[in-house]
Length: 639
Ligand code: FEO
Ligand code: CA
Ligand code: CA
Ligand code: CA
Image (cartoon, rainbow, N blue to C red; front, side, top):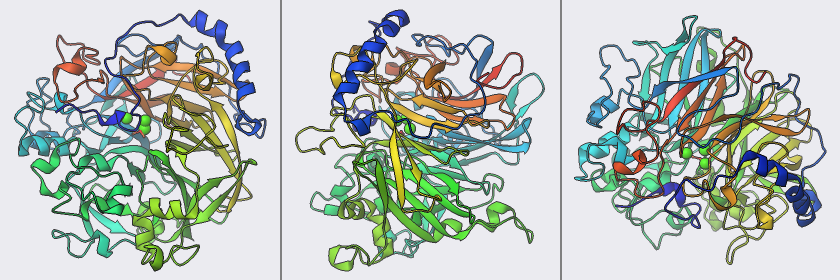
């Protein structure tokens, strides 16, 4: 079985990656200005980087930027150091159940269920003792079955499916700085794995809904597992929000005549092969099971006995993640995008204000139902630099039974169809969002959309201004008044890509260090903006991507408008998940899929051709890992 679902959203990607043709940074910088000028004549005025309110940023960015990455190593600026902290397969630290990782892939499914999952992604730090001890909570987006098992997908079996399911989900680990450096605390009473088989409760309007009921769950109240969890958000009340992104690739045997299944991109043969040994993922046997995925899920990491919850009021989507702002009246506003071509950006405004801790409840416990009641909106970006949040309320604006929406639950389950009907703006794959705590501007990375402008596809528009948008862009908006307002102004922070690219629409307008395909975006504790990239292995090192190197993390210097390259990852990895200790002196990030291949993901030999990071053992398997980045002098990251 040859498969690589990460390419499916961008089907023009070529195969057979080869590492060659990396031009020098000097050449890249020489060509930069001319390319940027050419682009400015190409785009409509509203698509250019605006001079509206800049990022609020109080603190300097004085580190010395680094060149593009070209090796199977992490690279950080002078005066910095980085090391892998928690790779795939390490036991998370559950007392009495800490099986050691086996580099040959021979750990069992039961072992994997108490070890770090694969493909680390969204990541947040939760303090237990300030900046010295805390929890790291992270997603495990998907798996490379070739690396996960002895023999890869050969002799595909129920045990291999169970192991694949166990390597998905979320990990909670405890970490401590002993004065020299960070390490995992094991055992820890907080250590936890949530997998594709962990029971979740259903919150919000879809709880008990007819479309959520299955033979195994006739009441529609409990779902087993979470899958393809990508980015994440940390709530002000102390919980972790995680997005279930490309859930469609886990289900097989769809009904080609079912319009709902069609709209959600379900397919005949899944990409992960679970339906062959677990009928839950066989749509012909369990047609409602896909409706139970695509949600934002909430986890209380401080309470390892708590049941995680699927928050259906926030709408169903291929959610990248979810990020919370707070209104002046204390309501939670949750922003979320759908990382899929031509899909949408959402916001949810809670009905109630965030409650304080008290009466014997932690703040997380006091707000256990906060995200179950409120109003969901979808974004419409107008050509004049203004925009509107369209309410997704049953009975309004055509969201009626006559149009296929029996109730609010069905509006949420069929959020794509509802957004289509409302005429929301189809975006170029919304990934992470970041809310500037000082200015209130909200940033969203739009990673790419090579189909934009093609026959039968949405045309370019003001918000998505480039056809065959291979490099993506970053959009931002500011609500009129408070975060719950229905109107906003918007502009582009930048258009990514190499100004030296031959194709006009591949030329970006980045000032400073170049990148393509932004994915992660986040503010650090001092209010500096950071950007991470996720170019696919099949794109890197050639053509329009030749001058961009390995995936990376950059700081956006609001004082100068320049991007400054801070970190580059090992070969064919993605850099994702950035979180800081409160003192800003430790950055934790995730390296995902080192050695990613554009070839056969089910072949154990494929990724090892490109990477054996971080262990560098002969023939060793590359392992996604959480990484610690610090300044050697103990200073604040970015200075
Ligand atoms: Fe999993 Fe949208 O990146
Ligand atoms: Ca992502
Ligand atoms: Ca991505
Ligand atoms: Ca990824």
